[in-house]
Image (cartoon, rainbow, N blue to C red; front, side, top):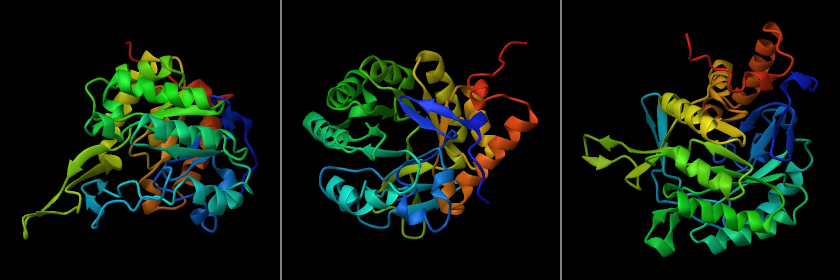
Length: 310
C-alpha cells in the first residue's frame, strides 16, 4: 500500500529532510537496489547503504552468520564492492527514487576516511555520510577508532573538513562511556550520531567444541540488544544537542516509539529486515497510526518525551 507523504512524520537530521524518521540500517539492506522489488523505497525516510571502503573488500571467511537467542551474530567483515563500483553500478538506480541516500564509510586509517569523504562530497545523489568508527586503526595496533574519544574525534574532524554533506557518526557500544565518545564527535563536527553498532559476542558448537563463526567472534544484533541500545540512546540524547538516531533490535512500531521517547530523532531498522523485508514500511505505518490516534501535530514532539519524575 502506497501512502501519501504525511507532514506529521517529517523529521530533519542535519541538512537531510526526511518524510519520516525510519531509516534502513547499513549492512542489512544491501545497496538498497536489492529491496526495490520487495518494497516501495520511496516510502522510507532514508536509505543507508552497506559500508563502503576505498577498494573492494572480501570480508571474513565463512561461516559468517549465526542465529542466537533473540538475535543473530554476524562476522561479515565489512565485505563490499568499494566506492567506485557503488557509484557506477548501484547509485544510478537508487537515485531514481525520491529518498535520501546516505553512504556508510569505513577505513583503517584517517587518510582512508578523508579520501572517501572527499570523493563522496562531489556526488550530488548522496545526501549524507555515516561514519563507522568501530573499525581497527592499523596505525595504532588495531585498536578501534571508536573506543577512544580523541581518536573518534579526529576521524570525524577529518571527514568534516572534506565534505559539506551531513555527517553522522555511528557509535560503538563496546566502550566504557558512549556519551564521552558522542560529546567528542559532536565537538568535532558531527551533525548527528547513530547508535548502537553491534555488541561483540560469540557462539560455540558444543559437539565440535569449535566457534560457530569463522572469525570466532562477531557482532550481536536483534531484539537481544534492544534494552542496552535504548539505555545508551537515552544517555547520549541527554549529553549532546545534535540529533540522535536510535539503532538496536527495532522490530515493531512500538520499539521505534520507545527510542523516540528516549530521545532519538530517527531510528534505523536493521536485523528486522532479514526476518521481514517489509518491516520498515510496517513501522512507518505504525508510527503514523500512533501520531494520528494520539493527536500529535508532529512526530518530533515524541523525541525526548520520557517522563522520569513522579
